[in-house]
Length: 483
Image (tube, rainbow, N blue to C red; front, side, top):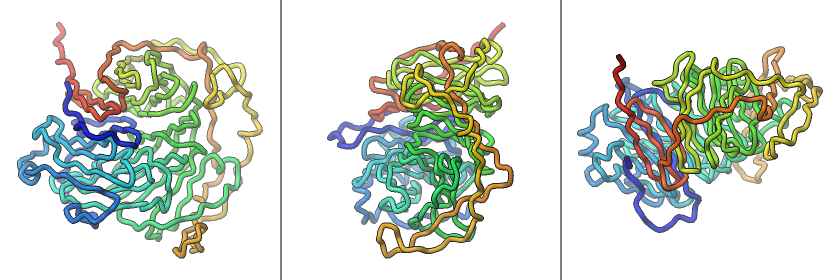
């Protein structure tokens, strides 16, 4: 069924996007759809600085609230589910079931268009609903929908001016959020801190050239909290593991990386089959990772065994969203879904024991990102065995004149001091078709008239969205009684 669609209007000159955040009844692990729960816990909650009803910002064109918003909010219960979605220049807040049918609020932006957003699970309550929004300009808006206030971060791209590709609140945190950018970096930011430009240190080793985390002193009162150098190309998506210890990232370089978030270390790098990777998701037990991208495939990776498990073939265009079904996953059998630019949803079942073992590789090879899989170059062992030179110890911030000629002071970030005997990341080359099992979908169905963007599972439904901003809710089949 179609829940609601964006209103017709003049076409936007900006690229169309349609990213949504919903409130599920169970935990989900999706790449760009996010989830939150209402919480009755009390918080010492700091509100954003600016009032949307007294709008003076040129960044926001206008805000259109529901004419009876306060009455609607006062009648809602913790069982009501909110949906946020951005399309074109707009961020729209609506009830999942369309009650009331009109949007609860609609914000239209002028200087940049929203690319992603997320809702904070820790602070969500009947009194607060914190949404963080990322923009094509690199800016962020922290928006409390209930008190109708907002605050702008990374203003004018002072810390990073490239487009934000994904933003997520740090699991378990009321204040910190993580954002990936189109320049290949990731920032950890605090919504309550002021921003300040910074200078990155030069890499001191091969390992730091390919991945480096830099941070200020613990006593710093400015953003960023941390800067990750991940790739020389854009990071397209990331996902936290269920235990919140690891982060999986995918990007335009066709690589999937796993990072030990708690110990701030790059663990493994996996090479995709062809082209860019666009989406990533963890299994509920944290054993497997799904990726999808421009090779029209869904790939299953074993996080525990650090290897590819299977490639899933069925889409006829780029795969844009993947998600495990938490109600149909156990220690042996897993179900997941994928959506793509072919406007279809595909359902998959897999059991590790049912897959035939892939052939053993005789040589270490790596597929060049962006090139057909038949072209390989050998991995030079010496390249990956270079010793890691420990960087200088972590020092306090030093103020320097801005490298951009500004009169404002600029912060110098320092590398995180590694522990002794740091293990270098392991590079896992791409395997050929004959070395990896292929899965076929159990269900294939066209569900949208336009290319799909993402998918999320709920206990009673599956929610999908497309590039034009249509959000559709699909009811799960009623459980059958066997016997």
